[in-house]
Length: 123
Picture 1 (spheres, rainbow, N blue to C red):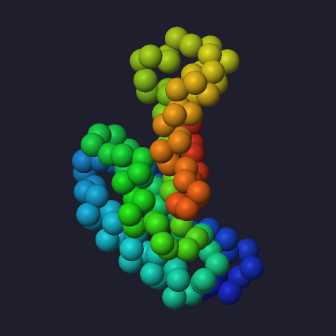
Picture 2 (cartoon, rainbow, N blue to C red; picture 1 turned 120 degrees about the vertical axis):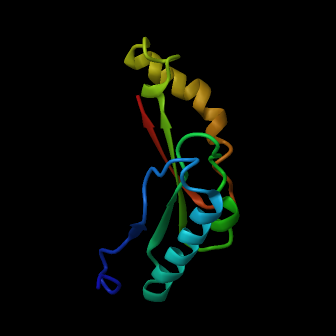
């Protein structure tokens, strides 16, 4: 119903699903069908695909699906607040941790020819 609306910019189908309860194959099928449904109605809306949370998972597990599809975005979440390593850090120390530690992790989800990435970090 909103396909022709100029305010339709982004569609995200599901957020923060947990590994191992959702398999990579099931997630790929879900996002493939969702992407195709959006493209039947809009050629310009971005389609956000959220990585699974927990183990086993990888921040790049959706890249094979997203690469080659226009307007895809990978949603990556880093939860520092659940890590015992950072619980005692100040806010500034958390920010420094993100710059020093997460920077190398973020390089795996950023690529000149890959999908866009949204990164959420909770401290």
